[in-house]
Length: 306
Picture (spheres, one colour):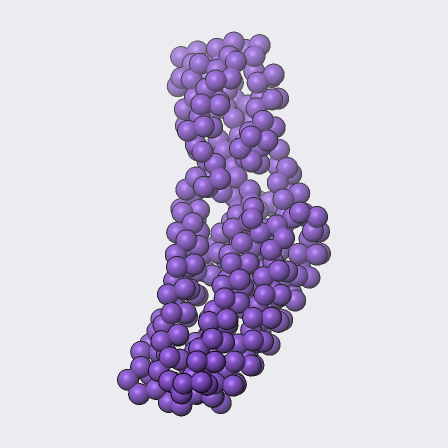
């Protein structure tokens, strides 16, 4: 075996701007928006749940339960954002960025539990639906459209590149759509007196939630198991590394998510020419970040394949 030398060219702080700014938003701006969204939805949960019981509307009660799970999800996402900004230490050498992945996973589980509760309650009322106060249902649902729409708008900035914030945004947008459905059902019940529509709409709400939750559950579970993030093509990364000047082989390539916004990579590169090492390492890390959005790259150079 030829002599091998190990080099790590790590840009430990390059991911921090990802947490600090999101399309012009500062950390304080994101915190403020999350806080306002949590407060608005908590107020609406109390309002919707109370009027749901007063009006005998399982659709309102179901949506209140769904919104409560979303409040818990928002709190999880908010907490994960705070933990993700903590500096790496002796116990958590990568920091606590992975908490954002766990928050997205917890959010999905909470939504599934809410679906079970809603479906159980709606199924029980299908056989003998109680009379529903259509006007009350319509008024509360209209309020939900406004508050959930405002919350979705607050969370939209920077959500495209962050699974954690995107999950919160999708839920708020979905809540606004669900409230619109409840509003329509309230109008139909008011005009026709067909109270059975209320639990039917509740089951439709469950279907909508399940569709939106499945993708979140699948992605968050994938990332929690150190799967390659969907934003990174591992074959393209392998081809890119293997095509570098002086590289004759690439092996032990690993790509995983440090958080919902930061990706890490480790790889062994066989470079027989010692003179090519410094230039290679100097260019590879920034190029991996620019081309593949990989923020932490640790590369080991070997003279031949071990």
